[in-house]
Length: 227
Length: 245
Image 1 (cartoon, chains in turn yellow, red):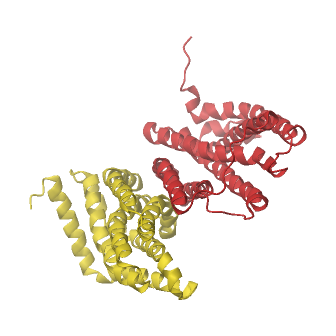
Image 2: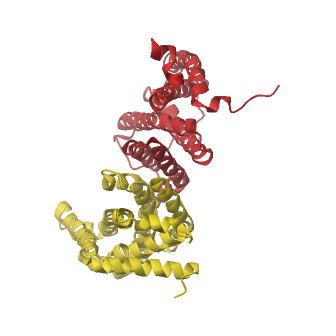
Image 3: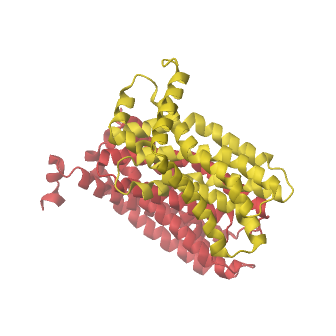
């Protein structure tokens, strides 16, 4: 792999972070188990009535995904920050935004993608119809990367702070509300017989917007936190 | 005559200027508030639909407007501080945040007080209420981030970045919340487009002006405290009469 091109750099960072994650599989599993647990708590809390569960399934899965992604965000930069790797990355001649994008992508593959893969099983538990389930998965596929990208800004800003985890959620959750709205809105639209296309397009637009802006903002936040 | 625009961008000079301006803003805020409340309660007639309940708009509407504008002004100062590295801008941003949060809270609180008799519920998940609540969360996030970083320079810069990201997000949040609400059901509760009585308008604009002046006075007072705290080790602070005496 040619390390001098931007794409080569991106692949290199992703491979490194994935390798590190594979060496510590427990971390990956904790997020996934948390997701499954939160979703399973809802029927216990609101009662096993199937009609109600079917109606709230999308919302429950989305909120649980949002919370689980908050949980894993603290790990995005903290290990590299503690062992000094992050400092070396910032000194590197390559673009910091690209390095950050690579780290976010690897983070999503490790913490976001498993949730998307797990969601159909949980959706079936809530007796979601197949069509709604399909839209939910597409929505999660488009939405969870946005959560990782917005969360990266918060993770960079709260790097090395006391009580960073709770603070991080406080900063990031309000910014994630549009993703939640469009993600659940898509499922809602399909189950009332409308097309989900407009919601999914808006999610796609948000994804594009986040893709071009958040790595740069995160890089700026890292520079503020590390100076 | 050349005016030095940057003279008051230094905390040293701004401290004195703010001290001179505070009484003017505070007194005119109090006077306008008294006048506005007088017009609002004694002159303005009762609404033909809402009776006496509508009178809460004399504090509700100004605080909603201010909570939104103050966020933008705060983000503007934050951006100035980040771009030009001026200490005073960052101090202004952190001085504005508590006042903005206060107005957002007052707006929600008075809205609930009005909602109970008019809608029959303290809270409905109306698009406007929800976006005001999210705005309060954004203020709290800004304050919390600033408070949890010990190094003031890093605190200023980090919370400035957050304020800018927040202000880019505000329109997205606002429209998404609006679509979210209208997708579920048409908004059943809307201000009917009746034209307001002239006395009601006068009272509302007077209290709005009073709230603006109050906000400016309070922010200036708070920024003076921040300046004193941050620059406490400098000679000009130790030579101030109020510090010496």
